[in-house]
Length: 294
Image 1: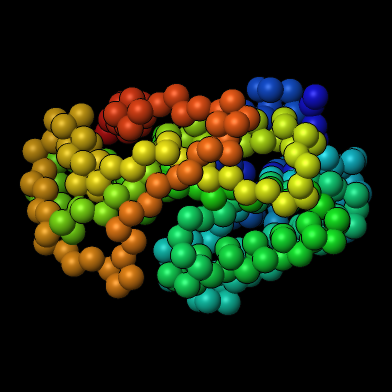
Image 2 (image 1 turned 120 degrees about the horizontal axis):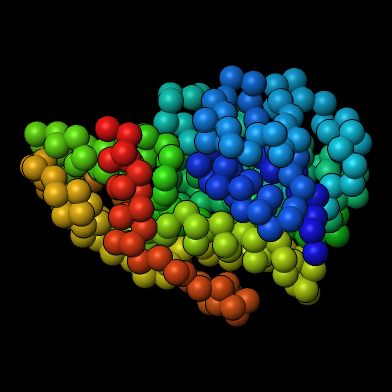
């Protein structure tokens, strides 16, 4: 059944892919963006979206001017990669979506699908701010204000991703044949998942959410199989036929480095979801697109 979805973060990698998928499956999308954000990722669908500027947003009017909103999907994220302060990260990851949750629930929105991280809450200000929103989501669900579904994303990658992300950094440097790429030993294991598999999980949850008995439910979104960072980098290196020297061990591990991360996909599999792309298959798509930009 088609729904009217309020989507935050539409100009980001995940949000843009999700917006296209929502439209292609018959949903109406009210999309929130920052005024200064580039529309390059959504320029082909912008005319089909009801675009709303996040700057000085009137939350009350947001839920009255666009008809009845059936669900909120929150993907907007401030990672802190651009030297944002703790207050700025909190404002983007906790305060802003809390406004959506609060005002939306009072306006009769029954569904809130949240984008969360698998990182420990105290690893950095990003993960802490995401966890703070999660606690609010649990509170709202306990008091039957909204059905809150939390999606804990593993390390997704795909076309038009953020250039500051590790996956993009490795791909772009290998394509450019950068003389040397300084890396840790790469023993950390990560669960890498292609963007289309992530989007399919969101669509399935949106479709099935009224069947959930609980008002709060959580799913890990990943392939369910982790590989070492070294293996991932070496796969990129091979697929790009790169001449870049991979200097494993040239960089130390971060303080508090997570050495093993892998999604438990049991919950999604019970909904008949499955991961369709292997790491190599997803990387081939991304590399082909990035190579075309050179």
